[in-house]
Amino acid sequence: MTSLLTNNAAMTALTTLKSINSQLDTTSNRVSTGQRVSAASDNAAYWSIATSVRTDNASLSAVKDSLGLGSSSVDTAYNGLNSIITDLQNIRGKLQSALTPGVDRAKVQTEISAIQSKMKATADSSNASGQNWLSVDSSPSNTNYQATQKVVAGFARASDGTITFSMVNVDVASIKLYDRNAGTTVTKPATAAQVVGSTSLTGTGAFSGGTADFATVTAGQTKQINFVIDLGGGASATIQLDKDTLKSTAKDLSKVTTDELLSAINNQIAASGTAKLGGKVTAGLDTAGRLTFATVGTGTAATLKIGVANLTDSTKFVAADIGFGATSNAPALTAASNYSAAFDISGANTRAITINDGTTTTTVTLSSAAYDAAGSAVSSAKATLSGADAATLINIALKAAGNTASASFAGGKLSLTTSGADTNSSVTVTAPDALYGFTAGQTATGTNAAAGAGTASTTTTAKGILDTTAGNYNASFGAGAYSVANFNISNLVGSNGDADVQNILNMVDKAIASVTDAGTKLGANKTQIDGQKTFVDTLMKANDRTIGILVDADVEEESTKLKALQTQQQLAVQALSIANSASQNVLSLFR
Image (cartoon, rainbow, N blue to C red):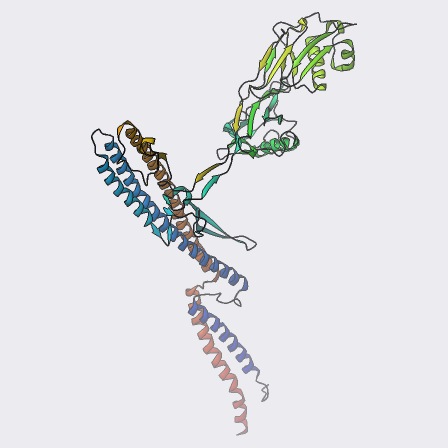
């Protein structure tokens, strides 16, 4: 059917032509721009990601520029230091010649003064980007001075959009050579007391292969770590680590990790209460993996001792080392002779012994009443009380009296120990019954324990390496102060003058070491900055590749597609022309 009002074939051809034209526009845009996603409407997700990555790359480009400026500043300061080291070496040579008898020190000083002026000029001219790290002014009025210069070294965006920058810190305060500030002082804060283990925790006897086994029973024993933390002034506590006390922190007692052990130690420190250790000391690991203990308090009043204590039961446990030794530091006192085999406390018989744990003196009297009160804790008869049962009764009495000493029986002899951690701890027996085997006044003291002490705060003048006062001339020369920057040997004569020249020579030698150390620090900063520049450049290229994967068009594919669409467009136009000519065929019927 042919209609004069509706041309179905033309509409179909027109729809096809419009579709082809739309595809042709898209493909042409991809070929001309080189991108398959050039606007958010092309692919909102990919466009958003690519835009974020481009933004990050712009930030990284700024970081790269910052690293370049930082590298320039470090290079300038390093070159200045290198030149000044040579000058200092020359000064040292001049001073050595000045010690030769008959040398005119005034002429030597003329040469030295020229070198001193050159060093100052070198430091003053070591400027880069308006920054001078060798000749500074740290006066409070100079708001541009920064003791630590920060070079932006990295850029990162967190998943929540938070932006952070990493920095390379250049410690200007430790490398400066001259400081025009004459009045301000620098205070170094007081330090805490610290004790560090002898080796890495994983390399101690308690650990093997990175973990510690507190579960395996060998010859009826498992591992136990017992040590005393003593802060002085009565603030001390015993830390006990074994299969029983580690249950709450270790997932697998046969593979206890260093972190789990550390948590258990800090838990017991906190549980000891503020009267002992709680809030006063913390355990941690240093960079070498060694166990460390440090006081919260600082200053010379902060003291800390770590000593190995006795096992709670040597039949159940074997001592393990965590860097402070496995042998107890606590005093152990063994009776001079065997315990009496005919120990009798039946009826009205009593046996007394007085024990001092270093702070508390307790007189223990074994009697029928004490025997009956102990109940099932003793098994031998009153008339023939065994050594083991005598130790049990003594321990009951000591514990009730708050005495830290404890008794044990082995090899026919009684022994006494305390939980003391060092040579300050002791256990003494006074006025003993001879049947115990101890002699009157018999005593034992602990062995040395690992110890540390805090330091007081110190105040120094805020000057540089070369202009910091390092000494004073002898009184015969006015007793004036001198530094590397301003010493003068022209008037130094006689034995006192020789002594002063020798002191100045030592000062210059130390200055060479300090400037060399400053150069080492700058060299490390330079290495860090150069490495970061390489990384940032690599990261930017990786980001470019990421953007390309997301939004770049495949030009070969799009070009081929463009050719095909152009052909389809021509065919669609011809089809539309044919469809439009159908009505003309109908008109010919009326001619």
